[in-house]
Length: 118
Length: 185
Image (tube, rainbow over all chains, first blue to last red; front, side):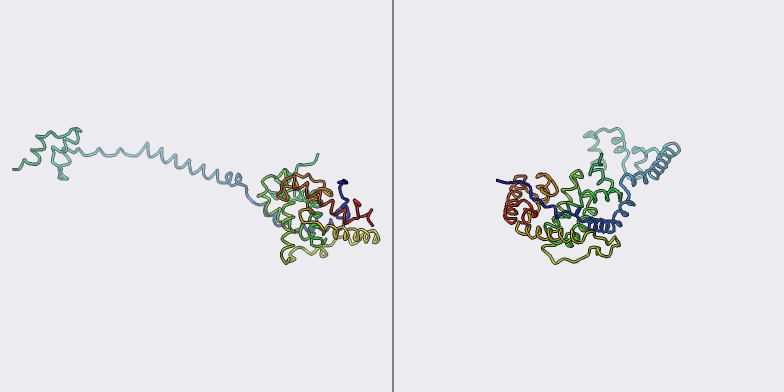
């Protein structure tokens, strides 16, 4: 069976150069704005590059501030001793002493604590 | 050595007008032939091709395989042509007659002959299905591979071959057994 290509040459745009040129010109006109928009569009790398310097300066300032605080800040006050200072908050001195030593109260201490007044 | 399409697409994405011009130059003929075969009217084909190139540029970032730009563009042309066939079309395209280009159209007798041939060929293509027209124009006129045509149509390569076989057979029947209109008339 004959299965050779069919001659479709009359459909070719190249056969009509005037029409072809007009079509190209029309496409050029209609794509002009989009191409201009794309030409001025910023790429992600360009955005990063634009922000890199201010970010670097900001990080440097934060670092310098942190160093200054570490070097020149006064020492924090020592915590109040529970055994002695806790009394002003109503904590009995012997309870403060237990807490400071990290020991459990003995049964005798508990009896004295709860029954001591009787 | 010709610059690869992928390179031109990359440059056009960044707004390089010369690169997009080159893409237009390379693929204009195939886009027009396809649109003409589908729509049957040279004016509608021109509108369709204009719209397709504008859309292609607007959606260039969505072209995931720039090395296969022409089959991606072929899909856009075909979809646009099908839309125009389906819906009442609003002519938003630049009116081609408004463009100031040379009006010398060469030999009038030859032009008329060409117009007649084209009209008869378009009439003959009207006997084919839309897929058959797409396949035969892209294969026999533009020399595309069945792989590329299958991509445009979203079908398998084997189906593209089958469409081509049927399209040739149908056209030869219209041409009275000949392979071209020249032999037929």
